[in-house]
Length: 248
Image 1 (cartoon, one colour):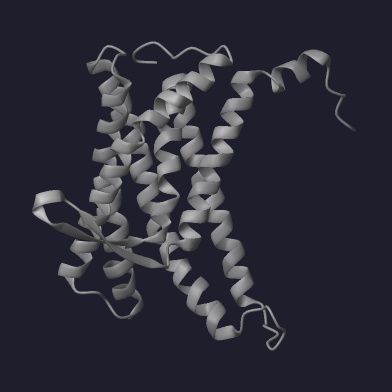
Image 2 (tube, rainbow, N blue to C red):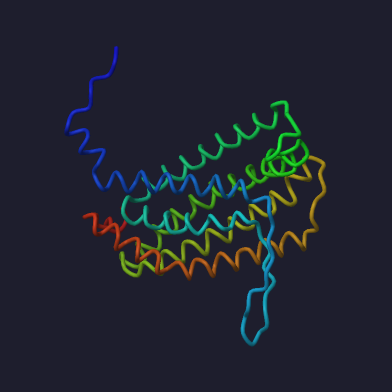
């Protein structure tokens, strides 16, 4: 039996600004996570200027490009929809990343046709997506734990500040949770998982350098993204939404 057609009231609920913003935020969040895992197999390096102190060499994965999006979205969703709704988005993104991992695994298992211009050969495809498979496992686990920690810490800071100073709770929750995330994902991807699979392992000092310099970059981004938090609040407020009360 076919479901009954939507009533006008149902259409209005789906088109409600609060619902539309929440759905858009969830989609952006999941997309950022999946893309971060796909491009995370590329490492980058540059010198971060520190003025009179010289410079700091920063090494991290290209997946870092997508994570600033999750920083902003986690804090905005937490501010307007609360801890429970934000955790649902974290879980949803986790499931989407798992689905993407399964699709990549299926693609790797397919027999390949080589020699067609514009397509990858078996070696190239495996170098990228075989490594991405490990990055998926490491990044998704770190993301899930770090994301849930960020949601929890945002609520703690919100209670401590009485709902004031969003810059403090947004930055504070991010810099703490991302320290945890950076350490977990780096040790899993470059040390623990390769060791379990019998693959080459980076030296512990190099792993720690990648984790800590990557965290420094995340810290700088968290501070620089503070205006984006206020911009997002202004855009959402124009849609008639108000922030939840402390402890919501």
